[in-house]
Length: 556
Ligand code: TEU
Ligand code: CA
Image: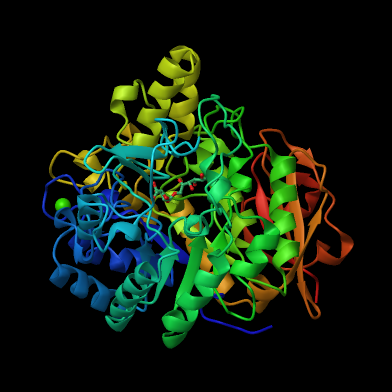
């Protein structure tokens, strides 16, 4: 097994807008991140991944970049950035940047030039098409509702935007675009960053001829994920690797909407010709609605075990896996898969963390996940900031005829804003996130759920994550061991084993509200307990309590 630091690391994702505000304007910033590096070092994470901090009009909170080499004014200056980078390295923490190059902002200078005339040299930096019979060139929908095409009156052509209108797609088939991107990446690497998370990188190569797509739920538009894993995507990534990535010691993770296991074996192949790993979306799609993302369904455990196990066994030895449940686009996992009541919130948060962190792959902790932060109690669509939620609500009620009283609870449960409420640092006003008015409401449960209280309490979710991360750092079995799911059809218990040479561990969790019996296989009965979320309980008594989790080593 070829070892690597990025295989042995635990990554912490920071959504800078909601992490820590240092200047009282209600918006998180770079100096805020710098002030929290001691906290992150205490947690034990090895890498931080920053969601975009580049100049942006914030149509999509920084995922619409108007200048890749300037810092968003709300987040501070390049000097603040350099200070944060240096301080992170001094804390032994690497810094991975978010690379958003499937599209730019419509305020990027490239697009301003491109849209200025049909003959502008940068016209082909983007994807322009003539109207077809007076309307859009094909039936593709945007991920953020509406058509994926916007008519530009000035030149009478449509431009493609798989996301918001203010996020025009770059034309990756143009070698000049690839050159611009690779040169920008090189300059960031020369500043000393340690890697890239690549936003929707699986979408950059569009299907030849831009054919119509299968119509999505709601029945209005074709699925833009027709662009996933396009004809030249691996060619472009191999070129990126040769031109940039191979020249630096980096961690690279591709956010790959629509990726399959077979495609992931190419993106994250062990030969290292493309990326180190990918984020897949099958598991976080299991609780979706009928053809739409929105639902109030609980994540179904048996399909979840099946999917995660497929990826564990499918990539073992041929590629590397990422392990995540949370990020800035996903609702809080304790509300989605666990139980966020006072009775079970902490225990279920620890149980979920146990089953994720004991697998093979690089684990990602999203800000607040280590505290067991929960979804927000939304009351109205007017409270949302996220354009995916807002546009989705109005398109599905006003155009597709869904009833608001049916749709609203679904959007409230799955909205990306659930992950974007400010980090809960302590029990002072606004959870210590800001001394000003927070850009998005703070979850009212912050007095109960905050970092200050949990850092000080040995049995907190925070200190449980610290133990999990420390365990991974001490164990080749956990990092590199093989995986086998046990009890595949059990609707409550998530049990698997990891094994490497003569070492073996058992990971057992009851992800339900009812107590169960569970006979630990003989060879683990007298093994050492590596971690458990109910230390007062003797795990060997044949019982496993609601949301109880533990890890046992095989007896010596
Ligand atoms: O998200 C990608 C995204 O939202 C879709 O690809 C979705 O994940 C997929 O269809 C499966 O549901 C990235 C960023 O993480 C997100 O914050 C941005 O809004 C988006 O790209 C556009 O940059
Ligand atoms: Ca600020």
